Length: 185
Image 1 (cartoon, rainbow, N blue to C red):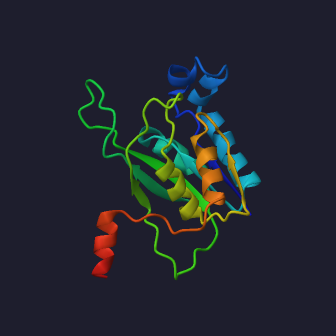
Image 2: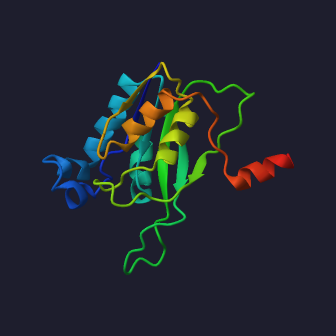
Image 3: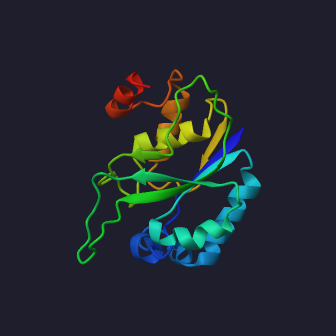
């Protein structure tokens, strides 16, 4: 099977955050560029895909997606607080479509992840390893599948994928809180 992850410059943040890193960064400030990405994901990756975006753009990008997508949440317990922003942006939506059917014998994967942001990884918005592992579990990607990172950036997604596919298959790591709750289930 063939899966993809897209972590483009977020709508309205292209030129500001990535202009010095890529000559076409400002294109991502256009809604039409995000529409083209959604169309590409749907046509090239019918087995499944995930796309990160920021909460201010969810209302604009979600209607571009097929009706069978699901919105998941990456909750950031430690996030960057911005001057004059009185309600912090402490979560990011992740739109997911498709994926392999997960066996019911495996632990259930939540539709949200609480994980801190990465800092100083060489590229704004670099995703933490645990976030990538969560996406691989949500889509239920297997080691012999193809997994394409459409926006390589820091290389963290590809490194996590390589480690994941070369390691023995283990279910997604439960947090202590989840493990404690499951004792009582």
